[in-house]
Amino acid sequence: MKSNIKDLDSQELEDWLGARREAPYRVKQIQKWLFQKGAGSFAEMTNLSSGLRADLEREYSIGRLKTLQRSCSRDGTIKFLFELADAVSIESVLIPEAKRLTLCVSTQAGCGFGCAFCATALMGLKRNLSASEIVEQILEVRRSLPADMRITHAVLMGMGEPLANYRQTVKAVRIMSDADWGIGISPRRITLSTVGLVPQIKKLIAETHVNLAISLHATTDEIRSQLMPVNRKYPLAELMDCCRSLPLPKRRRITFEYVMLQGINHSAEDARRLSGLLNGIRAKINLIPFNPHPGSSYRRPGPEELLQFQNALRSLGHQVNVREARGDDIQAACGQLLGAVSSETASSEQSGMEVASHSSLLTAHS
Image 1: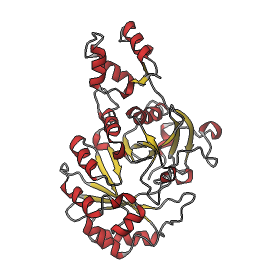
Image 2: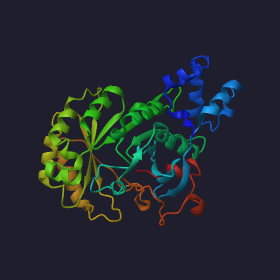
Image 3: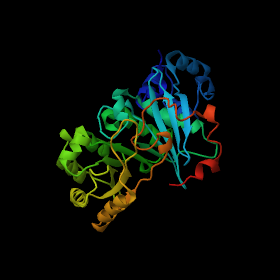
Image 4: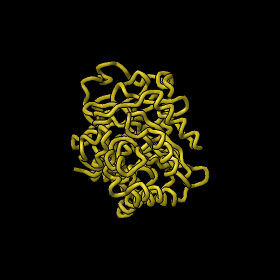
């Protein structure tokens, strides 16, 4: 099976070209065809010689994901179910808002971290995604959009733990963010969410300029270890010390994500403990009311309980946002991705719910 050329970094591609006595500037020509023009074949690369195109064709493929299903929510959110070359499936979620179009991208097929409230954890970890498979989610969704629309933001919050697939994730981030030859999404518009892998967090901040989001979800080690087994390896004190030590750029904050589970993690004492944990960290808090999925015993707190917790944190001086559920009717909301064909949500071919126009996507605001 031929290697996917999108998995080559710039140096690897330059070395391959150099062995054929091709000029280094060919690297950017090829990369622009792949990541900016969306070429599906080497024959389309008309500013390359026919001999070079033939050499590329002999040694490499231009991978594409197969769209198995596209499901459209009543709020305009669209979930894509993609099949990889080995028949493993992953999901991505396109979220339209008033002035942005965000794609939630997966970095693994399944997840091995076993968070108790997350549907993806039920799959276990099938495998890591390659850089090309991560990037191709953006390219494939982009192909489905009208010509006058573009994906403005990317969040690595889909299936899997990005920092457990560190090398391929960072390689993909570099392709996403490069404005010269890559996709051209500003690093300030890329957010990576992690369960809290401390060594990789430090490395990520040193090597990239993306935004960091930490999945916190509890204020004591006892509860967090029950919800998130990773806490046994990197407990709260170590995680918070790591966050305090990060050399964040000015005006940049760490987002702390907090899934609210009825009767478990939203008491007045939880608010005080959370405030204490964030002491000395430039932070904002995203409260996420639990999104139900089949087989889960957890429940979402009521609106009044949510408001009380939010107000308690605000009274302690914190910036607090509530993340509204998007796409929960198609199992596309936070914590609901399962990577399987759903019998409850029809594909675009069956339902006729397409990404039809600019206006149809932008009418749903969060």
